[in-house]
Length: 160
Image (cartoon, rainbow, N blue to C red):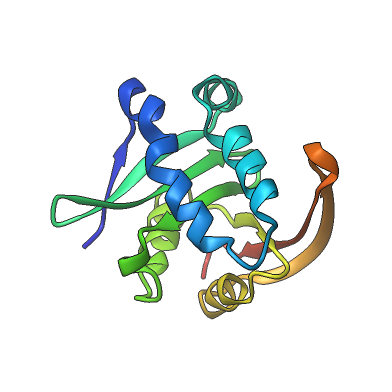
């Protein structure tokens, strides 16, 4: 069973070292390498994490048998929980472990779950759909460097 451990300040400072290799693997062939590096800085530089924390973001490691196998970041909102990050180390991907994340958040908050996923990330889209998520809209999110994130917004009902 997966445990969810809230990150302390030191872990948040080190999160970029843990997350960057995962992101490079996950987005290889989906997003340009220079765009990946921009996004890693945007989401995992400690000063930026502090800004997300002030807005209510919560960061937790996913832990299996005492080993950190991934991480999540989410924000409880008025009418839903926004799942901003859900990543596992390579050897734990494709093992249907995301189901435990969705159950954890659903059980904790009793609200719909919402997330953004890159439209080209077909594997992730399929994984979300198999866990009860449906596409509710599409977004084009301009990024620095002239890049654009082309995302689906997906949502899972609270009673799923």
